[in-house]
Amino acid sequence: MYRFLLSRQWVILTLVALALIPTMIELGFWQFHRHERRVAQNTLIADNLKASPVPVEELSSPGHVVPRADYWRRVTATGTFDTAHEVVVRRRTSSDDRVGAHVLTPLVLKDGRIVLVNRGWVPGAANQRDYPDVPPAPKGEVTVAGRLKADETTGASGIKDLKGLPDRQVMLISSRQQAELIGREVLGGYIEQTEPEAAGGSPEQIAEPDHDSIGAHMAYAVQWWLFAAGVPVGWIVLARREKRDRENGTADGTTATGEGGGDGDAPDGTAPEATQEDGSAIQATSPR
Image 1: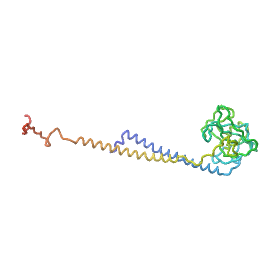
Image 2: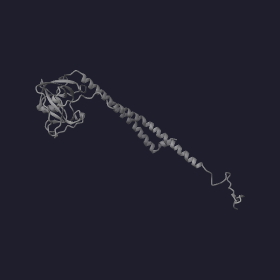
Image 3: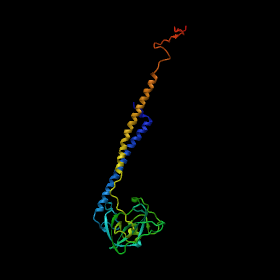
């Protein structure tokens, strides 16, 4: 009854179905793990933003790699801005998706070390090789508050660290790179400034990271698992339909063969009688 399953067409269909099931299950777990990471990140951001601010020197030092547990920690730093070594970070967007640059200004601490401060976003110059119009940093000693961030890398950000850029323009925020340019010790990571607010609203401060939305990863995971469950169901439906169609085709052929009699012979095998015009029967005789 199900010998058609051994046909080439059905063998290929079955193999494809068997390959799709684990693939869809794995894709579902991939989306589920992305959901878990998003939830964990939201929790981390919320907890670190609620934590009391601490001096940046307590969480970082020259050459230090900021661990993920300290991302977005609220920190403070007191010192004097070194505008002579200020740079802009190219191809950064504002809160309304305008393309411009971030202003990265070194802050010289009381002990002589430096921490990088991302003062915010400014519009780019008309010519990309020109230095944009950057409002001056406050003069004298200032206390900056903000969120601690790790050094940027191409692997983590997807941004290529291009060479041959115009003077005082960079692609990535790197404490090691700036330490080489400045010639002084720079604390690892940088501060995303939130206080004090810039006069006139420029540079535009970077918005607080989103830690409320979780995305649609869980919904995608459920969809992939439903697809995986639907594959064997679909295979069974197709196989039963094929079986039914073959049975109907066989039954139709049998009925067509069995309908009707022979070539006009009588049921007993004798030839039918001929009839004259006056209605009398003529007995058929066999030839001698």
